Amino acid sequence: MKILEAKEIISLVKERLGEDFINGEIKTWNAGVKKLENKEIWLEIKPFALPRFVSILKELDEYPHSMVASAEDIGEDIQVIYHFAIYGGEFSRELQINVKVKVPKSDPRLPSISHLIPGALITEQEKEEMIGVVYENLPERKHVFLADDFPEGIYPWRKDEKGPQSLIRKVNE
Amino acid sequence: MGKVSYGYSVPVGPIHPALKEPIEFHFEIEGERVKDVKIYAGHAHRGIEWIGTRRNPIQCLYISERICGICSVTHALALAFAVEKALNIEVPPRAQYIRLIVAELERIHSHILWAGVAAHEVGFDSAFMLLWKIRENVMDLLEKITGNRVNYAIVQIGGVRRDINEELRREIWKSLDYYRTLSERIKVLLLEDPTFMMRTRNVGILSKEDALSLCAVGPTLRASGVPKDIRQDQPYIAYADIGVKAITPDIYTGEIVGDVYDKTVVRLLEIDQSIDLIDKALTMMPEGDIVYEKNLVKLLNLIKKGEGEGVGRHEGPRGEDVHYVKIVAGSENLAVWKIRAPTYNNLLPWVPMFKDAEVADIPIIVASTDPCMSCLNRVTVVYPSGRKEILTHEELHKMSVEKTRRMRKKC
Image (tube, rainbow over all chains, first blue to last red):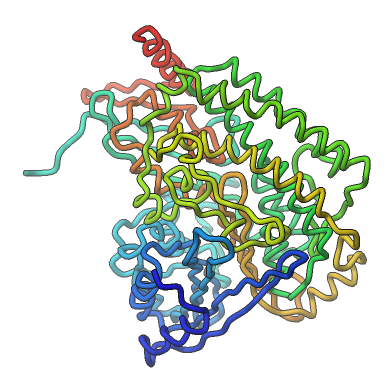
């Protein structure tokens, strides 16, 4: 396993993704009295380049760790941020990589990465039920955090969402 | 060949009166063997992330402590860390050491609690009671340091709320000595007990490949032989000064199996590691401030003016805990708050662990990842004829105890 610097990783991603790469930056933070420096990479890419990006990660580290994906409703679009970590296992070697993708709310399709990192399945299922991102080629579709009878088409994390009115009425009856 | 149909299915869960996070398992059983499992989480989604977006980060700290009673400082630290990264707040060195001490004390209490639960699940109740009695000492110590036995409320954005004085230092050292003398005996009590070994060796095996590809975290991952630990990989707070090495079971046993026994080994060795870390932190702790900004109004103003996003990670007793926050200028509330508790990533690794396990091993395998629940209250066994029989948590536990008795008789 060849260990690349944060800067080198950004230029590698930029080179491989070409037009699908939007921007990338490095953030640093210190810890302890010795001010040990840790680095984080923040990237933004086009949504359909996501599996290609994960393949690059898999070249850098055989098993990239998928922490979670966070999602936000930003008006017209939905922004999903995947948090990955690579190079773990040695003191102060791990590199955290956060990848942002934006999909329009009217057509929130994203390619699934769970065939590349099986551990990302639950977080993708959560995004589907909570914010209504539609994952293509998701191996299994099911509710993880919402009840099975939760109405279709209602996504609790969307800011314009008013909630499942039918369920609320039932509670008050 | 068509699809193989298994004997019958056993739904386990979702609700037990004593648990905070119910979960539901659907086991496919053939004879006594588990062939497949489906997991349904989130029966009590409390919408904490949504609540958080209507409050400022200081208020959110106290909500985050209530996500889980056992790892309270874990969530508070991860959130504080995320906010500090988003706003570039620098935590004073002394506060970093105090955070480490409280986090490691919490690890000691959580691991001893887990060891007690594991002993109970295999019917070793005398060990369970003894271990929980031993745990009281660290709970009392946490009360002396923070004022509370659980939900310590010690973390503040940019530091901690209480200092450790000379008297407390002596108390902590006394407590560390107590655990040092006991740690060897706890190891003998569990790891060298023939019955405990029989019940946990080769049970609930998680291979290294599965652990890595399914993104397992914490002792569940390390027991499979992967030396990953955020304290080591991306050192934060005082871990950067002291240095940590991830613990794998081969240090003690010389081999890696990835079963429940190995998970016990990792947790018990981590108790020793925590004792050493606290000891070093107490010696190396520098003098100085304990918080970046004492005045809460000034701190809130700073948050209101600031803007940014940050990811806070903390290695809790159960594994990596991740909080993502986004703060926008002009509002002191969090714009986005995403919480990922360790159990979330340990849901999928359960599937290979359950494969080919016996029904009586379900309690110990569920407990082996140290999930935030004990969800085995209602088990409905559906026989092929359609007859249903409901097993309670006690009955399932009884099955586990009976298996221990049977095995004891055999040897």
